Length: 245
Image (tube, rainbow, N blue to C red; front, side):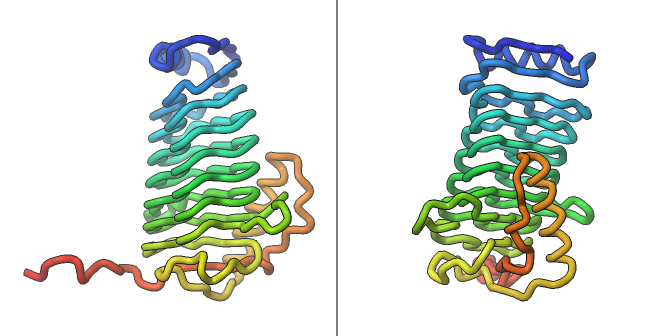
């Protein structure tokens, strides 16, 4: 295991150091991270990076198989276009987590910002998942084309909304699962509430249990059958915007 004190190291220099280490070490611990961008970008090996501090934008961008665990908050764009792997964030994250995500999983202990899961997609067995422990901001799952987003609603303050406005706007694939029944005006017109089936209940149970294991939380109060499922109204909602030849 390799340890690096990242205090004061410029993000390009830190990433260059990581590039040189991953060939030989399977586990890396970064201490005193403070806003350095692109940590773990493009990693294709089965390697684990533990981050103590606050990583900057686009952590794990294009990642393909590695694991990153953050003991703190994460900034915008975590898991941007990631293909595979696992991200665990022991805190909250900023906007656009999982942007265009194509595979793998992101678990966020607390809350997430705006446009999380925008343009998520799936292909055959590759079905990305984002699990958010508390609440999410506006445009959750915007233009979503595949995968699953699960919103647990833990530790909400009295009167707080579990999700922001325009949830599922423009979605044309995938599913969004929200603990409880959100206000109708929060949902985009392309997201339609549908019944839970056995597959949904099994999926929710598995991810709820794994969330509890990661963050050492008692999840007995979170029941899969209490979730609302939203799926796409139309798999090709913008066909009228294209010219017919």
